[in-house]
Amino acid sequence: MTISLCTLGAGRADHLANMVRGLAMQTHLPDELVIAVMQDAPYALPDAPFPVRQVMMKGAQLPLAAARNAAATRAGGETMIFLDIDCIPDPDFVAEYAAAMDGRDAVLMGEVLYLPRHATEGGIDFARFAALAEQHSERAGPPPGIVGACGDYRCFWSLNFAMRRDRFAALGGFDERFTGYGGEDTDFGRQIAEAGVPLLWARGCRAYHQYHPHHMPPVHHVESVLANARRFRDKWGEWTMQHWLRAFVLMGLIERRGDDYAVLRAPDAADLALTAQQADRPYASSARVLAMLEAGGAAAKTASYKAA
Image 1 (cartoon, helix red, strand yellow):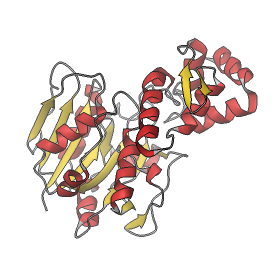
Image 2 (tube, rainbow, N blue to C red):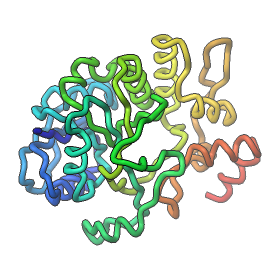
Image 3 (cartoon, helix red, strand yellow):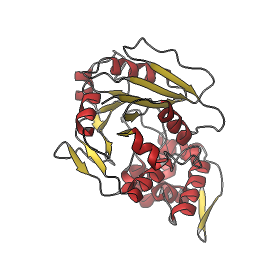
Image 4 (cartoon, one colour):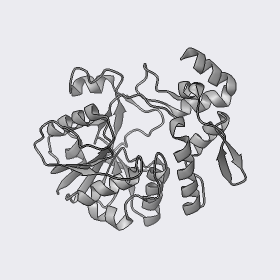
């Protein structure tokens, strides 16, 4: 089995360099790394014991769906592993995916653990990462065996998954009508479900997510989240990203109008403070923010702003 590792990026050069270093330490090296580059210049990368191809993207800002498709089109491996730019693969990452994918026509999602701030400043240290990293409270844990069924397509997550290249092509890849942030993952998950392709959790295939400032819910992308949620509704007859939309309503950013939503205003400093990645936590949590909003409404927002 030949294996292509596919990623995409805009900025975060240090994160990508750490990914390349992690891939160079694999017990089973990938046959290549393919990077869809969503910035003007290619990345300067560390030396790697496998070919690295950089595919330059043009056009829309954050063309996430198109970038994944572009990487897949350039990939030559029978199996493709998609891993986000801010992740460092565990040394057995590729080997465990190869074992789990052997003989399976399925979509597999590996484990993701979150590193706290400064965890990578001393270099790649997997023992340190394992001791420090945390599982996301809003994501499922690993299955009891090598693989386990995922019963809800909405759990599909492109941050760390693998599948056969021919199956990806047969599904048509990601829907490139989804542009900007949000929705393209869930849409692809729905395509997987509609096609009857098994969606499986995998034990192992672990990646360590590197810390970076972020917002959850992604208020800085409210316009594209709403536009992509609307595209999903028009395509499948139901809304997606409903927890984010609910939070945006409670924050007064959008309001429901019939079977649609309208943007009321841009996020302000208080919105950004409420949703910002906390320096003492390894990941941002939509559930935490939504619980605060549901419990305290505007008071929760004001308290968060004053504390920031």
